[in-house]
Length: 195
Length: 195
DNA sequence: GTCTATATCTAGATAGAC
DNA sequence: GTCTATCTAGATATAGAC
Image (cartoon, rainbow over all chains, first blue to last red; front, side):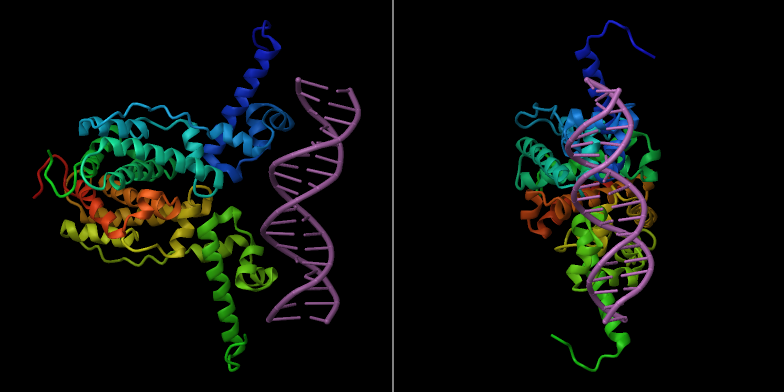
């Protein structure tokens, strides 16, 4: 079981930390903050519970690390073509792909019941809304942006977190195709035909 | 403080039970299952914690009562006019109005982290999806119905549970108007112009 | 550095006094 | 019938042995 023997102490420690964090992410993503125990995380990572505390200080801090989202999208500069926007949306929220990263799922899973996760989610979503707002033209851009983001959130929840059977069984690309006209309905400025 | 003195014992008890249930609904809706304590419910209802147990047996059972949704919409018979469907959707999920009943909020708040709430939510949403499916024509009716429901769920979460500022500040009717084209994009059968 | 053992805290549930 | 007091379980967090 022991890996290559030439691993520095620091390297071994780094790997253990990472293993713990990965385990935490998965459990937080699956069960949420409250129902995930330090013991379970330790067991999943194959370490002692005390070690988890040693490394991360508290359950809160462990969650903060596990759920920290490194926003990967600074692009969204100025208005773009609607179809690009739609694709960006579908990609960004992982509707297209088979699943969001555990990091995002962890935040999402707990955002309705854990204050810190709620704050994190609000910040992330607000930022996404702001980016999207800049890309929209016409009246009520900010509200429309918010509705766009919330739509993808709702679909993600139904698909990834609740596993609603009609969404779970449908191929992701098909869902993306079905969603396109709806998203376009929010992207197209209201009360004026498409430009 | 004592009410009209001519209240039968049974009547007084009934009112106390109701007061407890109301308090439970609000706290479950606001904080979720895990973070709501029997003690807090009792305090909010102005009774002793033991009384809550006496009446409802367990926290689980109290939650089940508080979150039990009496589905108020058997209508949805056969296909209708798209605009009617849209209005029904917007009304049903309380986007239009100022808020959902605490009962529904309680279920929603906990559906991502509490297994029983998740099951309840799945049943309710699946039923709504089924009703909606029957009202849609064209291919992939069930998937489109699911996307419609999830959209309203996402907006409700952003609005009522996360209080995203762009949604919180916008008048509900305005949001409804902005959502209409998007919902229409899912109601209109794909790959064919509007009938 | 790692783990055993334990302290402490919180909350659900219960028993018995009034 | 109502409440005080308590029991119990489960979890975070810590102290100290190895």
